[in-house]
Length: 218
Image (cartoon, rainbow, N blue to C red; front, side, top):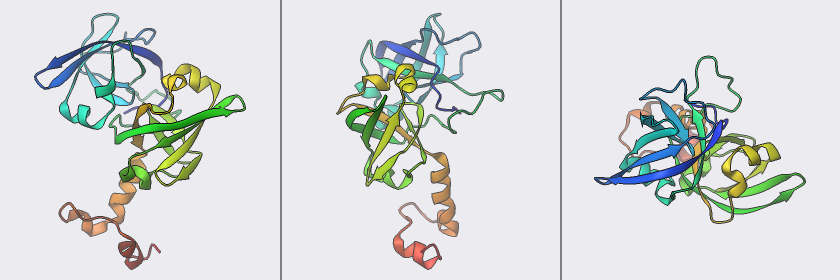
């Protein structure tokens, strides 16, 4: 688990195809690795990666087909900067929100423009994730815990302060940038709970307006 508070900006320095998937090497720069062991998790642009080797200046991780299919990782190139966060501990301050490091989908930056000293970003999420994104709710963008300022269908806006722009890779975003999105895990659990006994039925069942009205939610 993670908090969505970025600890350092790393760099992709190797991408090795391995029998259909990828082995990845990240240079961690000023991220303290003294307490990291093989098998530990490090969120990299919001993707929970397992450390398989520690060469001294960073870490190696294996990336599965599942991860390649559901994140922006296939777009990554040598030299690309990435947000880094080590897994939280019982002593960690939960400054952001509860983040699993399991990316729900890939979004796209629609636009950005100055808003006083901040930057206003408009993001388009996959249609399937729109129902989980709420005004003033939490969302994780490339591993960064952020507050949603406005929702318009499958698009939402973020107001990013100068500190966040400096301490994450968001300063490099431009229209067309593809980004990893993780919705608030509480929204997913709430959806599941609302199904009640229907949760035990085969996949394909979903919450509809008719279902909500029948069960007193409308």
